[in-house]
Amino acid sequence: MNRRPWIAGLLLSAGFLLGLAGCSGKTKTEGGSSVKNGEAGPVELKIGANLELSGKVAGWGEDSKKGMQLAVDELNADPKSGVKLSILFEDNASDAAKSKDAVKKLILQDNVNVVVGAVASNDTMAAMEVARDEHIPMVTHASTNVTITQKGGKCIFRICFHDDFQGQVMAKFAKDELKAQSAVLVVAKGNAYSEGLVKSFKEAFTAGGGKVLSEEAYQEGDTDFQTLVTKIKSADPDVVWVPGYYNEVPLIIKQARAIGFQKPFLGGDGWDDPKLYDLGGADIKDNYFCNHFSPSSTNPMVQTFVKNYGAKYNAKPGAMAALGYDAIYCIADAARRAGSSDPEKLRDAIQTLKDVKTLCGDVTMGEDREVIKPAMILKTGEKEHVFHMNFK
Image (tube, rainbow, N blue to C red; front, side):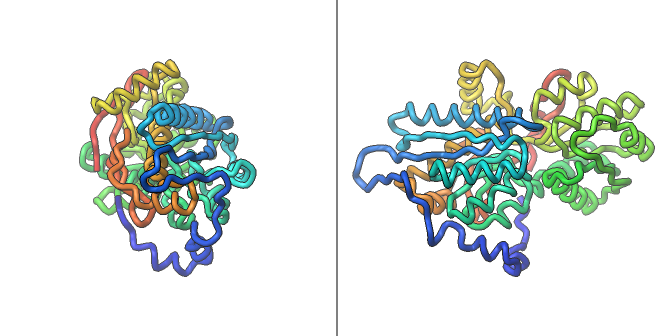
C-alpha cells in the first residue's frame, strides 16, 4: 500500500484539526464494562452496525450483516473469547444523509461503544463526522475511498485496503499480466469510490508507460449505455477500467459485447456480487477485478468460514460477508486487550491491532489507521468468479 506524505497538507485543514481531538477528552461510557487484571469474565460490548440494508447496494449490506452476525454468534458461544457482544443493525438505505442519521441514533440513543460500517464510501464519509464529534471509534470494513481516514480524525479506522492500493494493483496487473498499452477509463460521476479508483489507476498506469485514450462517465442508475460503449469501441483500447458497482457494470459490458467490442474490462471490489452475472449473463466471462476475498481459497480458516456461513444462511459468502466477519473479530480483539468497552480505551486498542488473523489477510493497524494487506485478482467465469492470482 502506498503511504503518501499527506500529513503536512492536511494539518492546514480545519476539518483535520478538529479530527485531532479524536476520541480524547469527552467520551461516552454509558453501558461500558471493564475487566481488571486477574478477574474472570468477558468484556461486554455493544456494537452499532450502520449498513445498506435497503436501496441500491442492499446486497452488500445484507451480506455484511450476515458475516457480522455469524462472528458475534461464534464469539459469544466461545467461553475463551473474552467478550460478550451485542450488535444493533441500522439501515441507512444506501443514502448518505440516512447514514449520518443512522450513526446518530446508534450513538446518541442506543449508546453503542463502537460503530462498524458503512459499506459504500459516500455513506461512511457522511457518517464519520458524527462518530468523530461524539468520540466513538468507528471501523469501516468495506469503504475504500482514500480520504476517509485522512479526514475522519483519530476515531476512524479501516480494515480493508483503500482505493490507491486497489487502483495501483489493477494498473500493474493490466501492464504486467495483460500486456496492456492503452486504456479507456469509465467513472460513475459523483461516486467517491469510483472517482478515487479512476484517479489512482490513471496515475499508476501512465507512470508505467500506459496511455489513457479517453475518460468517459455515466450516472448511477443509468441503464442505456449505447453512447458510452460506442465511444469505447471507437477508441479500441487494450483494456477498459470500470470501477463501478455491480448494478451498472454488467450492463456496460453486455452492451459493449453486443456491438462487437471484445477486449477485457477491469474493475474493483464493487463488482463482487452475484447480480453481476444475473444482469450480464454470459457476457461477463473473461474479465478481471480486484477483491479482498475468494471463497475458493484453500486457506483452512476460509474454508471453515465458508462451511459455517453456508450452514447458517444456505449461501456462499462474498467479500462483504468476509469483511464484516473480520471487522467483528478485530473489534473483539481490541476489546479483549483493552479489558474495557470504554470508547477511548477501545480506540487505543484498535489503533494497536497487530497480526490479527482474518479471512482477508493478517491485520496490523498503521499509525494512519490503515492496514497493509494483499489483494487478489479474480477472473469472471460463466456463472461466478474464480481465483486468478494474488497480487501486491
